[in-house]
Image (cartoon, rainbow, N blue to C red):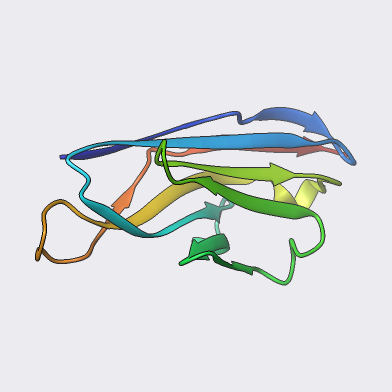
Length: 120
């Protein structure tokens, strides 16, 4: 089993910053992708940022404000969020694509989510 635990969400005023952390644990053999999605009320879940083999991708709406980073030794992924806007309010989900054994399939794993609320 693979577990993802997010932390760092909360309430912040517009223009403020938050740092999300996600710890992956359990029977992890290898991780290919680590990233963050978010889902605002009444909207579909959307990709925020991800790291694939050292390369990063960001949603246009967060470029130049958010930074994703990874600690491979600790199976951690972080999301530094600066210049937050009310439209960034959402539940943020950590996800990874990982194998649990050599030669096994790549599978998606998700955290339970952490609420980020940005007040105007």
